[in-house]
Image (cartoon, rainbow, N blue to C red; front, side, top):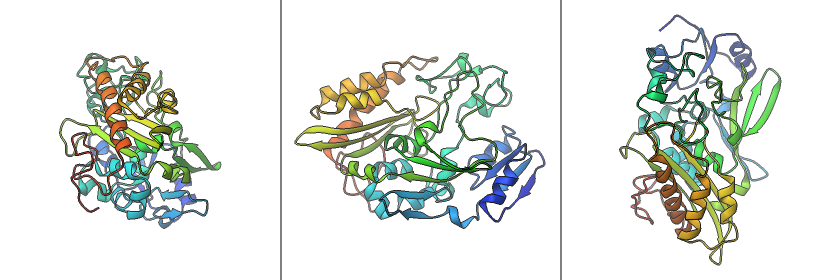
Length: 352
């Protein structure tokens, strides 16, 4: 690990000024960053510690019905907030399926949005990786790539985004509040992450010094609370990143789908929102044939980036399963195995 300066600002404005310097990066819980530093994958010259800025640690219910989640809210605190879990059950389920309880108790909302890919070649400094060292190549293209992208990838990079949390956030139209030298701006969560194209080292739309201050969920997302699920296929049920994941939300009236939301994880460098697939569901009966039509549309542009063709039918099947379970209804309490497609539809339950 290289030597670095450590700065502990007293305000967001001070933090932005400190982080705008070349070589600077923000430090919150550090559950991803410190691992990357120990492995010399990233070598910041300055750490700007924002972990004690109180204005970033609140969950707020706004007058218009939106919910505003500060960037330093802990993943576990958000997932176990009873009102939040009732209003946004698929998001709580996604949070509880990610990492271990110890990491969820430390990891932050803002950090989750910005966590780096878990591609083994990105972590191995002896391997060529355009994301880590632009122009060096992508050893994953001819390497062990069974878990890599099938949508939105390029010859320069086939890595996937590792976040569970971001998938239902994208599905339910979350907004990210960002502050920087130019003031505050807002963007859709769906637009935060970038596809690799020829510049995979540019992972988000954030400019130098900009900081995520909050995530906001619109009041309209509560309409899906009674028919929302997050499912995640992983190599083991505990403490594993998604091979493929899916968030699904429906509003249903007399057996007919009035609104639909879908998003996929583990298939691209960003959460993947298949708007065309959502549109195919609206106005149609909630049944297996229509779920399958939507799944085919969602993966219509998918293609293997290596030895990962299996991810395409896997993603289709998971969409069908997620829509089926969403249509059956959100469990009253969190399933004992959050996000597992093998959980009972009504849930083997525990109290959150």
